[in-house]
Length: 545
Image 1 (cartoon, rainbow, N blue to C red):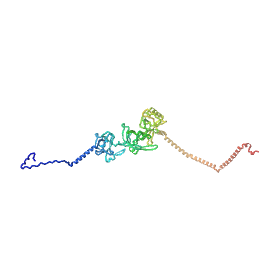
Image 2: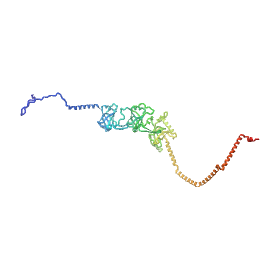
Image 3: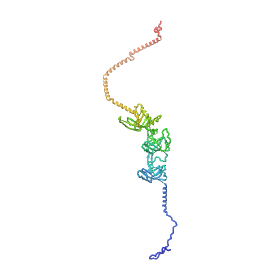
């Protein structure tokens, strides 16, 4: 083969080597990869599949704010709904103002419905509340975030977590109602609600009114018991034990053992009245302090009245009853003290709220309103007839007092100031106070009696009597003994004379016999003369010639 590059130069000092043949290059027909590449290729395919699956199953990412992150751990804490995992905690960080924590939660694809406005989230941990003990399972498994799906259509990503589990979930059937009360009492979230002593619901929340004069309570009544909440339903506090002492004895009333510890509410229609149509969702009711107040008819607008007492008010308290012959017309709202510079004396004003409608409902016909001219005229006439306020003892054991309104015909004349606000009504002392005054007057009179002088005179009189008795023993008794001896002798002689065998007794007996015969003869003569009166002139018929 010819060398294209030209002849090979000869080597120095030796012969030329022979020419080598040019190598023949043979190209392969196909290329086969090595088995080593199969493993990373399969791993890459698996990784791509996992990424695709993760992207396909990944749901929305939301942020929940909590007061603290107690029991929460990124990558471990789950989000559950009805014990089903619907997400997990990915990150936890402090808020910019350091007031709370922000928990980033990644929901699953199936849990997209939880990312709406009215969804609720809370941390499930062991709790002891009014409804019982909850979250005990987290003692072993750890805390998790509970969820309650909302019904809103508005999608959001930021939520404020609840510090306590909601009393009622959104999917639970029933009705929610709103109650207004002066005080919260012993109520709390989860407090039970009773209808005829059957638990039918619970308290879901409460808040203070904006004006600070009352409390608003949110309650939930489960189905099917919500059908018994009507327009005429009355609500009241059923907390604790109601003990009543009256003429029938002691009555103890309570809804259940739970109400004694955690309190409770109860509702029912008034006796003898229908409950009316079913109350709609979020209907508003008044919450009474007890069952008797709840079942009482509406009282209307109260009338403020003040009464001035000139006695101790010990035993009278705010809230004490004001009644008229057993009918409670109001209660005491304030007790004060005032100094009268003219009389240089103290007066005790007692302010009360009267509800005239309580009395007018028991009067046939309509009565005039208190603030009208007719009502003032009626009140003036009643005061002229003896309408007075009086303090009376309501309980002998506790010494509690109440204010009684009644007609006292013999009360001293008085007038009522019906033009002022509050209206001023006159008062009269009670019988016990009058008795105390009489006893005090008697004590003053007894204190004026000179018992020391009387005692001295009595001692002198006793000394004189002792001297007199001594003279009687020394002088009078001997003479009296002689007189008694003579009298005894006289009685003995008379007894001897009057004995049955004495001569005097024989003579008297014979004289009486003769006298009896004489009387018999006179009776016979009298009978004969009555039959033959002519014998006085002619004599007996047998004697005539």
